[in-house]
Length: 108
Figure 1 (cartoon, helix red, strand yellow):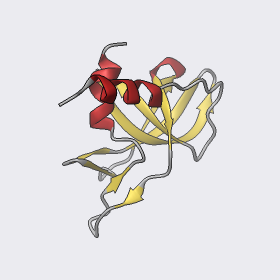
Figure 2 (cartoon, one colour):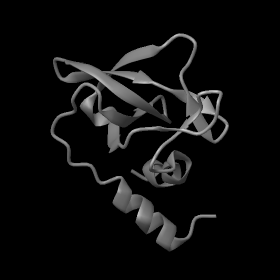
Figure 3 (cartoon, helix red, strand yellow):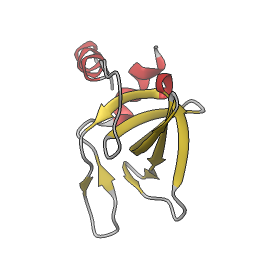
Figure 4 (cartoon, one colour):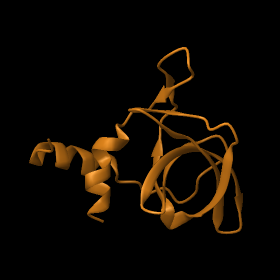
């Protein structure tokens, strides 16, 4: 359940005033109304090539075929910290719980 303090904390974590993202950095992207973590692979013009993960329960994993998709800067929501391996099946988690941020992100 989201409380007003949870929402305030989540809003504070999505403040991202990055002017540029570099290869190797991790970001949260929005694609077709959903949010995905991914690694920036490079920049092409005003867009960024991001290799995104897919959901694995409450965690994330690499898909069998990597999805390197070009995202415009406005679809990059925030910079993330490095993912942490959470089990032997190569599932990962991040420093921010994306599912907690989703209701707040949807308000914008």
